[in-house]
Image (spheres, helix red, strand yellow):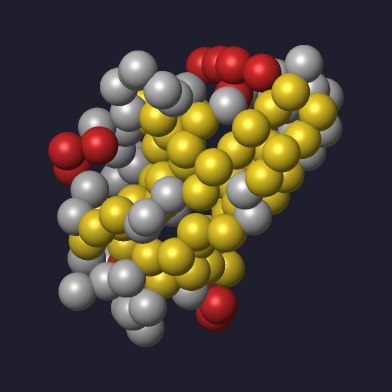
Length: 127
């Protein structure tokens, strides 16, 4: 079992920045692929970014968001710059269990592939 705790959400003006953090409870964090997803009111949960030994981004955040991980701290980050009102959503962190051998595979963008989820953190971007 892995517990994920997100932090760093809040209210920011358009063009501003936020950094989300997701702390994981497992010492084997380095063998988990990690993803960030978001869900706006009335919409389905959508992929934002993910990281294994490589990274992936949805097109709408490329060049603005950066995902990174610190395995020593069991933490994954999402640096969000040039925020837009359409980025407003609850942001969720997710973990997919892998082996060291399969960490080389690209991260997944399908939320159904992830095994554990955090409780979410609200990001609101005002215009």
